[in-house]
Image (cartoon, rainbow, N blue to C red; front, side, top):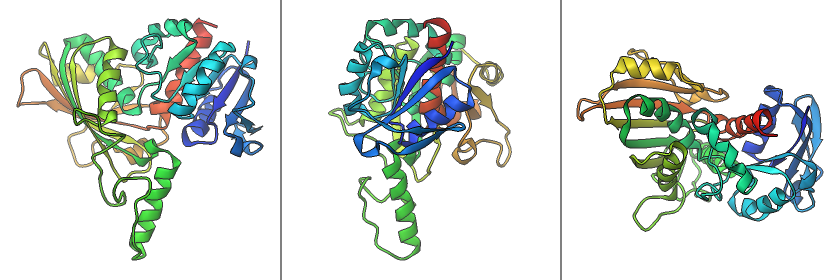
Length: 336
């Protein structure tokens, strides 16, 4: 039996990626609706071999779909998601709006798929932050093996995490610099081309940015754990693909060999870790791939029971679209 699916925010980077992933994975859908803002109504999008006409979010009847996969942003989600859920659609939301709601499950299927059952409280499931997703994929099997005490993560996040306007600004700035023209930041706080910016999202009272706060609270919610997380989030001039350098302290000793073995056997992960020039994976190589890849795995000699690792993932796929579709796959397999 097929299901009826709405993709909300279908004209955006993540929305189009969701359509691609649904088609590539042959999701059991009888009908797929592309939904976006009124300004996009009537435009056309490709879905496999089909062409979908975009429908206006303001007019869309969510009672005719089983699942709504949303990437429309927090403010939009706050308004439409409860209405869609009340109409009978199960909303899988990519924004940050519902992630800390105790009645809304926050899901990475390889980590906490059992928590999907909690969707019945509000008919809403939250998709975590892209950087959180790739990190918890690696943390979960290690935590099960040796119990994590503390995590310190520094992220190198691509501009696609900020949406299409961010990608366009990096392109325009790069071209302007090569042409000898003046660069004026509009989307970013400072020049993004050939630069790095140690700010993602707004600053909070304690000095962290909201992105850094998200990685802390979301990790604890997903993993039902209480270890400390110190996150430092940086935007880098890369179009697609997030990277993280992660330092993990454990309650118990864990060898490199044990860590490498358990990570290589864990779903959603790959290990490419050769101690030679180029024996690691970078964001450019991971773009368009489903797997999250671990490299540079090694003991941290400066702390007891500690490891370092490098984690890369396509933030538009596993960091957003793929994770949302995988949640929907569990829903249709086990719940609806």
